[in-house]
Length: 121
Image (cartoon, rainbow, N blue to C red; front, side):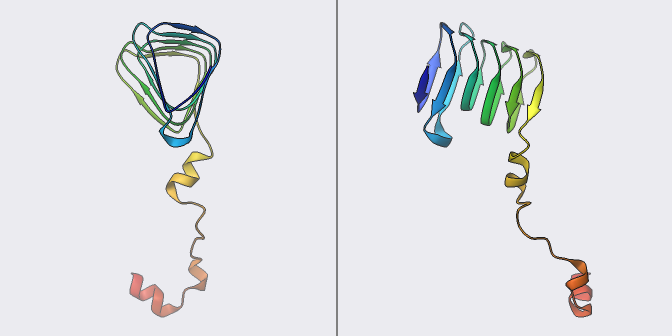
């Protein structure tokens, strides 16, 4: 199943769920909702069950009744007390440098003149 915008699941889906449509795409799975398959979305708010791997390019929010059996790959993770993950939590390696601005060139201390060094001290 592929969606854009937002999708709210209260029942059971057997198969993969994928979002398209950029940063605002969000999947919400209620306490009575279950997905048996992989989830590839921008944002996930889970209070139900996922049996499969979760790949969220932005945010994963695991509410108290959330249950995941599989790997959870995320950029930002919020996990409430009571939520369960039976698998791995994997932070997205590409997200950290982009978010913290590590692509910007660093200032080499050897290139600074004595005046600049004393002014910055």
